[in-house]
Length: 278
Image (cartoon, rainbow, N blue to C red; front, side, top):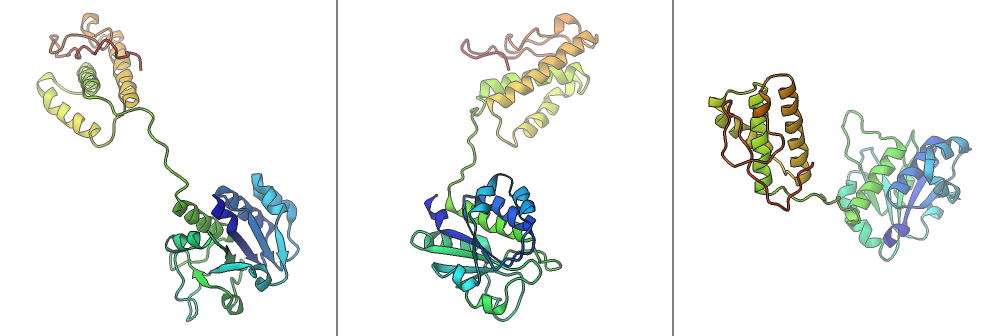
């Protein structure tokens, strides 16, 4: 994460303390901490601290500069965020496309991301100081973004492009075939018991059930939860008199292929090492 220490968020004359505090929070979400304000008016600091939530340290460590030139004087790349069109702004690049280049530059130099005033954005004289321009794609009918939202999107794209975040791995392994077959047997019994399908149509209906559950990954934990649903439903069906007690399997063990008069099947016997409780 060392590269993120070289990123600086620069806010030019921000108007609202709440926005500045929200910018601090957005920066903290994605590992940035260097905040610079250019010629800020008298900000509502209590509001800024309230909106910063757990990122007050970024707010308290902010630096203030009288001009944008001074705020970015030590930066190798200066990126100006703009939502407006125009001759000198038409080459603006989306943050997703720009992020890899900025991360590479941050290996050796400071990079400034400059955001303009909430009401007027960046002036042309400020755009002239920028090496690159950034534009966040938005609907053409309303392209203006809230200041903190724009900062958050830019920081998010940098963080995502850095490769530091990886989605969590599924802890439960894919359910093996024998466990899935026990599950389908229990669901067949359950659907017959509650009258969802007739015995003569069960094979056809179960093909549909298999297709539904086959559309996505089924882990061992998933299958055991669904088996628990079937087991409880069969117990309720027995108590309600929908099936005789002797036809409701006391658990999900039994001999493969055994059929009761109502069409309920006993699931295959699991290996001795396989746990039974969901």
